[in-house]
Image 1 (cartoon, rainbow, N blue to C red):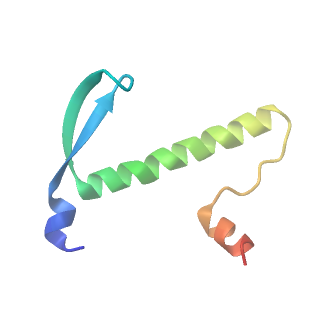
Image 2 (image 1 turned 180 degrees about the horizontal axis):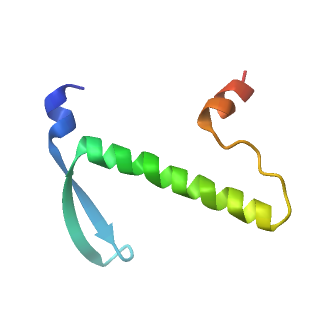
Length: 71
């Protein structure tokens, strides 16, 4: 991937359901990839919170440790 592809604008469709398109946004690819990373971090935090509320000890949800555990 070259620099021009990273800074090009890509479309993002926001759907309320499978039939109703709410809006179409355009963001640079690097911003969309940063959003994906940030969003997954948010959900990992939610998972840890839910497990702790159930009085469980959450495992490490870091991808690095996941890869190490697969060896």
